[in-house]
Image 1 (tube, helix red, strand yellow):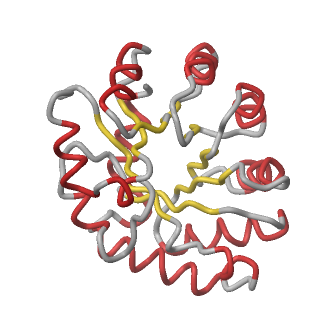
Image 2 (cartoon, one colour; image 1 turned 90 degrees about the horizontal axis):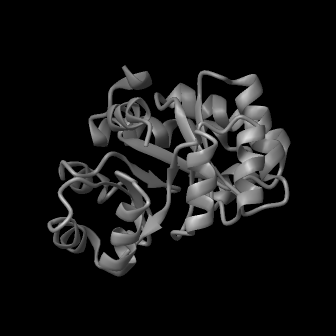
Image 3 (spheres, helix red, strand yellow; image 1 turned 45 degrees about the vertical axis):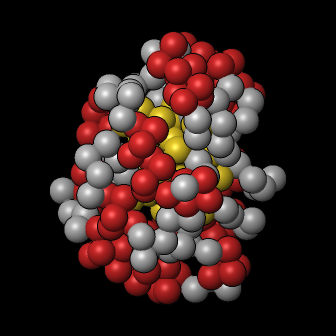
Length: 215
C-alpha cells in the first residue's frame, strides 16, 4: 500500500461515498465536497455512468483525491485507473483484483470482515484494508476484537457509518479513515441539493475533528 496515500487519508479522516446516476452532477458534487472541507471522495461503480462521472471529477477537479468504489473485476480496476482513480476499494477480497492493482501501482483497499479474510489480505502483502459492512457485523467492539491478533494492519470501516458514530471509530488508532454516504445520499444528488451536501460535509469535518482541506 502506498504509505503516502494512507497518511493523507489518515489526515482527512473521512471519505464521502457517492453513487452518481448523472455525470452532469459529478463536478458540482465534487465542488460541494471540496467546499465542505474534504478534498477526497469515493465514486462507487454501481451505476452505468460511474466511469464517466469519475473521469469528469479527476480531469476537472484534480485537487480532489478521487477513488473508485465497488470495484469487482480486473476490468473495472483497469477502467478506474484509466480515468484517473487514485485508489480503489472493493466490498470483498478478490485476489485477482488485488494482484492486478499491485501490478499496476494502483492502491487498493479490499473489503474484509473475518479473520480468514484478513489472513488472505496479509498473504497478499496488504497493510491497509476496508472493513465492510462495519455496523451490520458488530461495529467498533467487533473491529477492536478482530484487529487485536493482526497488529500490522490498519482499517477503513464502511457500512453504517454516520454522523452519530463516526467520531467513535476515529478514536481507534487502527482506523485510517471512515467511509460514509450520509453526506451524499442519492436523493440529495438527484435533486442537485449541493448546498446540503456541502453543509453535511462541513459538519462531518467538525464532528471528526478533521483538518479543513486536508491540511
